[in-house]
Image (cartoon, rainbow over all chains, first blue to last red; front, side, top):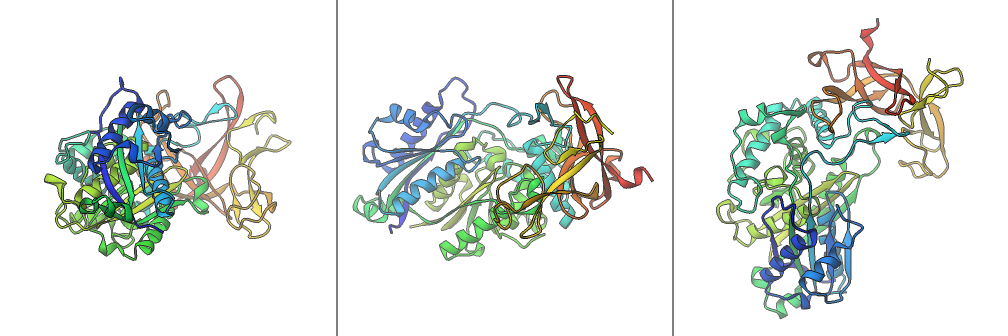
Length: 380
Length: 138
């Protein structure tokens, strides 16, 4: 089996582009990633495209119409918030297997503003607000309260996640938002679903990101090893059975299983990781995932954020891009944007937000349903 | 009591022939696990096919976790408390928690599931379940 390397990656600045087509946004990211690799579309042996909103409308093929209709196989993936990471992983599997030497992975999404999804019905009767809530903020608020129940975590500790990630994104020119949100402002923002205020919910944006994957043999042949980043682990999981799963979506076990398997595949542990981009769709989620990814022991996530250990300059910086909370969360693009962020740090090209001497990084996304992807990347 | 023709709002709420609503789950003959939700072919826990049989669930339980929803989809009245309840004897359900001030909500507090008839959006008669503290009706 081949070693697999990221030899090119980039993302567009996340924002709101209601007048653009999804394939146009995706094509821009595809060309940016190819330019970063110094390769043309004609070199790519397959395209893996992640998109959720138009999942039944051949988005990958539409992107090729804009960047070069080469006739290569296109695989379109849809896997909740793990959609982009799933596309990346399908490309990784294909190169790993030895089937291809060079593939392009693109994640792209056009979102509207406002709450994701729509009210559920049963027997034709709307049940939102009648049988509890199924909005995403309410689900992650309920999971945050489970952590409050277990460990006494506080509203303020959850709010600190938003302060940190909004601060980080002031250093990231590709983030949607570039402003500070002091703790008081976060805690006094409109309450959406306790303990989540509006500033503790990720921002829906349009966006796209791309990555070129290459076998080790081909990367050496093309002289691309200088800025290449090795994929040391790629794991995808679904939620295993649990009792509470019937009423409460599982984002914890599915992440724990993925992280455990990823560390095992990489032959590494959490102590070896220099930076993490994890799925902070809501501020509560970030604290849960500190523990799920093994960055601290169970029950210590609140203390970790209190001590600033996950801030830029801390022991294990988390979401230095600004995260989903502030960089933005274009569902299908998020998984590959995380790959771009970590790769950029491992290459030492992250500018003002550079994590010093970063050599190994981890990316994590988890989607409702549930689907979790974890990747471990290392400077080649 | 509700009309025996009233529709239910969840797959685990049934109405008996005399109009009494109740919670119904599925028990796996092979591993004993209690499943809540729509019928399925195999036990999600032990994977045995065809072993799930309907079973009556308890109307009492304890509050596992919750959130106070202040903003939902447009048109949905707020605030309300969305609660996850561990039923005594097995099973987990979600529902609105009523009859308690926000400041008095406690994890693990004893609750009961009660049923009421409500009118659906098109005038259809429906059975809704809600959760209330057990001390609310001593």
